[in-house]
Image (tube, rainbow, N blue to C red):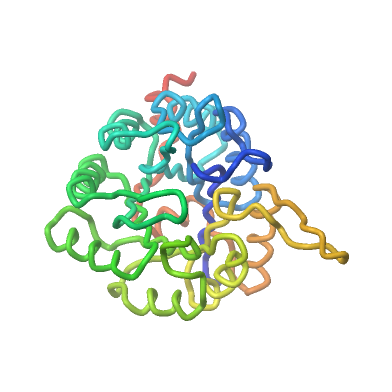
Length: 294
């Protein structure tokens, strides 16, 4: 039976206040633990400043990771963003990498493979110089890059850095569809991307907002992995009267697990996901010692 990796993207940097988004390290850690218990193998972490807006706060990353790993039975893969700033809390390239340089316990890191107009907010900047440094850092630390692809041209950017030796192979791609300024969340676009990555690569996908369910089901049909969570989608569905049902991370992960099983697959455990992605086996005692957890 095929294994499908479920990633839970719990918070994000741009989802506005007013939804059931975890914001504090304790809230994020609690929802990460819940997502793992439900069947998510990976949790994708962003931090929020005290005002609730996205921030690349190294100490909040540290505390969140420590809280997750304080659960001695929890072996979920921790994937931390490198792009969680906001206009109110901008970050330099160094600040975007600081937690990846200094903190133990991070196994995966996002790698947004290019710049584009993230409408209508502004330009999402990932310069070639930053991407080279970030790729080199991930290789030095043994961190698995999650190569986020918002548009087809980013595949060429990824190929360039692979050929120059700044990204390890095989690559793991995360297709991020439905952001205005990137590729729309259509099955046609997903199929194009899947058909244009190197043989032996692994991949996952998600659609923003209304694209959530079409892309999730298409990813399952095409043999990929899936990402769900409040970073990407805040509406679970509509009731019989057409009223929106607002989502929670628990609801979204629970539905993803059900969808994987209905398709005939099994949600990958974190140990199985590490094997699929080429991530070293988890040593909980070593990680907790490094984090100062008794």
